[in-house]
Length: 148
Image (cartoon, rainbow, N blue to C red; front, side, top):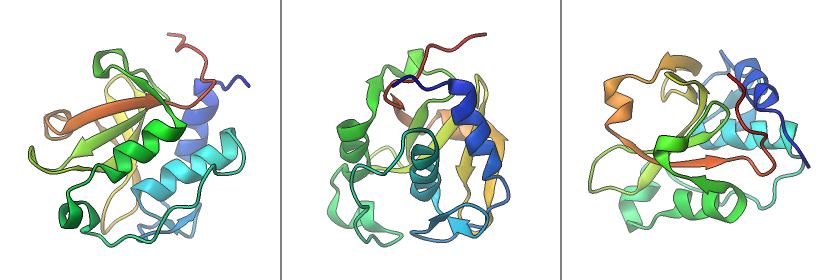
């Protein structure tokens, strides 16, 4: 299966404005950061490979495990941070000593699409705040190389 990175980005942009809803993954109705990635997966890859377990907003701090990173590693293709290209999934640590718990889709070399807590799915600049918290990058399986 071959997936166009343009299709990944177009699908992520179709979610812009979707309200933030914890654990949801329905375009236009609500999603969180994981729900956005899950929804893009369904659109470009098909059925989700596993169900997301119930989780609380503070789940990562509670047990300290890299649950999000481990799930990404089971289904996505790990890429070095310096090699991340538009269409890749980025994971972030909100504190240096905390597990990764936020996800976004790189939409341009300096832009991300993500579900912003308390607001909606937005496309932002990959500002220093986010760059400082960047911890891992993954490609969707079968994603074609980025064409500039």
